[in-house]
Length: 418
Length: 189
Image 1 (spheres, one colour):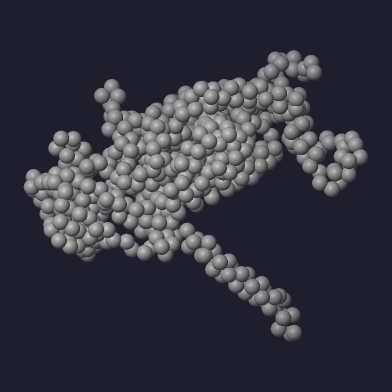
Image 2 (cartoon, rainbow over the protein chains, first blue to last red):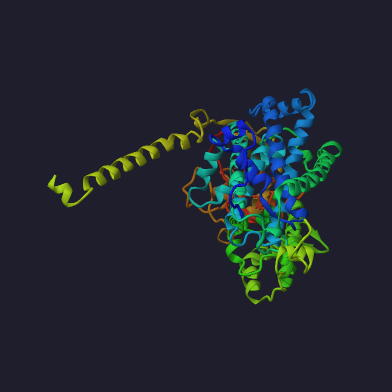
């Protein structure tokens, strides 16, 4: 789809630049004239929304770093000073904290979109795998960031997550000590987490560049999951999708602002407004909502090493999806069986999240949640490693439309009015 | 010259491989300082010891003191708690080892190996699962099923000798090295 460049420098300065550093040509070809399937729906606007989220986190983060002190004795008070004394510090921090949740909300929608429409299938395997890498980097960044306010949840969250590495046989405890820089989470840990929390967003920005680069080779997938066959199937990215992306971005920002201004601690945990105390663990440790499904898996396994392996395996599994899906058809729109298993999978992820948010021995309707989590975890893995390969072989997909243009304009697609 | 022309590039290949190998060794050697800088500093390594005054601790009570950054449980056990611990068959435990710093690694997890003086149980208050601080159980407010501790993070239950009985934790709570200076003072570390 990335055919010959259509860039035509108009002014002298553009011609001069084009022969030395063809940046305007790159922008023109990737953002203006880039041929994009004409049938992209709302779920395809989240790539742009995610770029916006990364920008918000970097800008507010740089500001917060001007006022934050990465020291176990001072960190908590410096965050309180940001909230009370720094001009608009409360706004910067609430945008940053809620921005993380918005970022994950958008990335989960983006991932489920890719899963539903088969966007990971050839020739887009690498786009998907780079995306999984971005997701991993996001989780690491969010974890490091959550530790920085040095409240009770920060401290004990850091303790639990770093202790995951102690499950590794023989060298596990040495790795944990190496991560801490001490024999427990402490000042050394906080300092290095701050350093990494500042670094990783820029790494993410670089990997996002690769993600978009890889996307621009085959071009966008689309809700029909069929290839672009003629220029009639596409529209230029600008103005069609710049405007569509902008419209949904505005709606997204309204939701974002609603949290920032009306319920800024909605996603937070009140325990984190207590300074870190290494001697007292809060009665209920809960990670941030976007990690709850994995946390539920960890807790549902009554063996330390196995629990950690299952939790890590849940994420590693995502890398193999392009090869686990054996279907020749991409989009679930034409996969009546897969569609049902897909929605069951979505429900199972929400269920896991719910189980992770409840106490260890909680039960609902007489059913211990630990068993709900076990069954949901089993389905999570079965969905990818059993259902996906088998359904692809036995399912009879519905008839695919001849082309994107035909499905948009009907059978008289030969001469669409344009 | 004859040797090099008959087997073209041998000498040059050797130089390539040799310089690449030396370069790789050098890069690996330089990587180590960048890795090792994250390990505990000499200040953190300097072993600290803490003296604990036991005079105010009543039977059935537990106090928590800080030792090397970790919470330390000092529990004065009641005769019933000691008896409950002694009645346990060590072979039936998930972790049959004492996990006591003062004893060999292979020492069994008998009550005597867990507490030098049966009345005083001194443990590092770090759950061996993922490092939370377990909550102590008392007859008034029971925590877990074994009268010892319950870790609220992931549900590990310990008995009245701090041995893991149920839940995801793999090992018994660790016993630190300690010596009694008098009947009411103990030095830990």
